[in-house]
Structure formats: structure tokens, C-alpha cells
Length: 149
Image 1 (tube, rainbow, N blue to C red):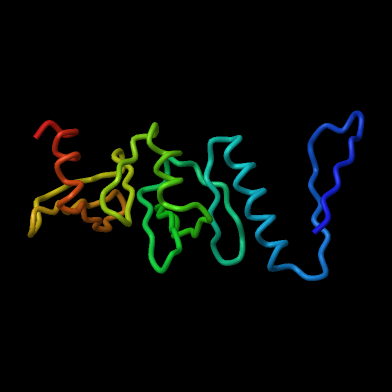
Image 2: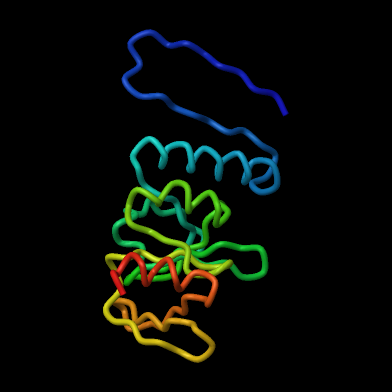
């Protein structure tokens, strides 16, 4: 891979051009990282859905979870895959009222519609979109403390 930077006086916006023999592989990884960097600068997250990359407002993300080493962001509009690991999302979203609900899930505290105790010390959350997310026994005490229960 060859990287080249050109300084162009008077250019109003940074432009990145990726030249490759075919899209995919290294080019796809470079584009994904560039999308992440662009999103970091705006305070947004990036998510892919049906081959397109979207900039997502973290406030609209209801929760995030992992499955098969892939991370997904859930909004009212759809489910987006992100390149970020759950621990990276947790660091980025901590200041925005997200909390760890289990080893594989983060929840937007402001998107919880209701909650109720469940078997084995878990807590069942009903999110604004009607979906259920479970807080594991390990993370339930932190949520109870936050709620003042």
C-alpha cells in the first residue's frame, strides 16, 4: 500500500481519494477507518446497513450488542453494523448516559421505557422501540444504584 499526501493551498475541505484495483480488502478497511475518524470529529457513530455507511447520532441509538464477533447499533430506524468493539463504544458513549448491561450489551439509559425484575437476578428492560434487553445479574446492582433502588 502506498500513501501520499498533497498540500493544496486554498482547498476548503480535506479530500481523500482511495485508488485500488478492486473495492474490498485493504480498501474497505481504509474506508471504514476513515469513516470512523470523520464520525469522531462530529461526535457521531458510523454504522453500515445494506452496503451503505450512515452517520448516526448517539442519542438515537437505543442499545448496542455483539454477536459472532460483530457489533450492532440498534435505533428506531434499523440495525446497523459498526467496526467498533463494544468496549470502544462504551468509552465513547459513557458521557452520553450509556451503561453496560451485560458482557455483550450497552444500553442508552434515556431510551428505557420500563423495567422489571427477571429470573436469576436479571432485569428486563423494555426499550422505546418495544424490544426487550436484559441486564445481567453481574450488572444489575449498578443499574439499581443508578435508579436509587
